[in-house]
Length: 591
Image (cartoon, one colour):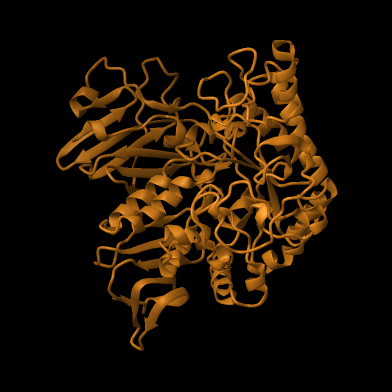
């Protein structure tokens, strides 16, 4: 048995309460392990720990597992009667058996050694206040991300002086303005409702001297080129009336260099009352170049975005007041935290406490591109932008020599990183204002484009469409991923085919609980190397998804299924079989 491949600890995603009654326990082993048993019970069943008690526990096999690249992930759910749990593992590899405790591995002979004290794993108490709770509405939400400056120009009277004509073509300049605004978003709310959207994520909208607005000058004033605070309030109100939630971008890692507090620091130096609100390492503060010399910290060495000291209690109070103002003034439903991994944990805990008391289902989303378990214990973010999933999906089509098992490994990795309740509300996306567009990732292959969207809409979590993706909008890396929305073509009907396809995917997602379910597995019932198949299990139905990534057609037997709920490049025969063409999609509902 390869003991070095086995891992468990009573913390993080390996042992945690799913709710007040159920305890999830996971263990990772190598592929040589055939069976895993858990022996568990209440710590005090045999008496007070440390005495001469003889504790035994209940032995159950762990049957559910997922395959990772180098490991097997075993999972079980227990229901401790007294909210406590003491446990250890029994592992089998062929004829070999080992017992796994907190301090390591024992043979059966070593376990029975007289005088040996066994170091059990112990979940001491499932405190209800410590259970990670996530807002239930998010799993039912289909998000739509809007970069306001490029979405729709609804009020030309507030356009910037240097605004360019609205046109759909390649963007090469980082600093161009096209005049998108809040009125334009409000005008297009019926379009979003008809598309099936139930949540809007807005990139920054508060005053800043840039088209992206990530260098904030005033956190309480909507940028004049976008409109007024009343415009934002009306946008949220009208969206709510249509059943659409609204999430704003919280840019709290840094301010703009024209923020009054930073200007005060530049003018007064260490005598400024805001000297400790930023991270200045050398006085006086020099301007005119990037910050790689470390004279002060800024976002990505950008001189015009000095970094806030979110460990400072005064800064925390200042930012908490802003969040309170946004919720009370605009009635927003969530916040996406820009550069969410560089903000202090202490500040995020204060945010969670305050927002949960203002709106108990408020959604806190962090922009983190890597493993984020440290932020997802239930007292900071509810969720993160699931860039690992977007990478896992894209990579299978990038590396055309990879077999379907690599897709399985990568997807399973994404959903074994966090708690199950976090998986329910992960913010899943395939492109954004920070990446090249999905069609570009798919190398302009429209069939691959829809294959990846089919995965997005059948994964646990909460899917997000970047504005324009519903019409297969083109665009390379920033700034080209921020093109103007092609409203003229949309309004004239030229994009009806693409919009119709997106509506089908959204309808499937919203109408079938199994699409949203956290329960899935890969039966790999098609022998072809690059035909992906996975099953989604819901409460009342299950789905089988097939993606043919081969260069040739494959035959699929659908006689045991009730209906085809979504397909592309699928030709059904009369005998209960059919042909799924290369780059085709088939989603079936089971009887």
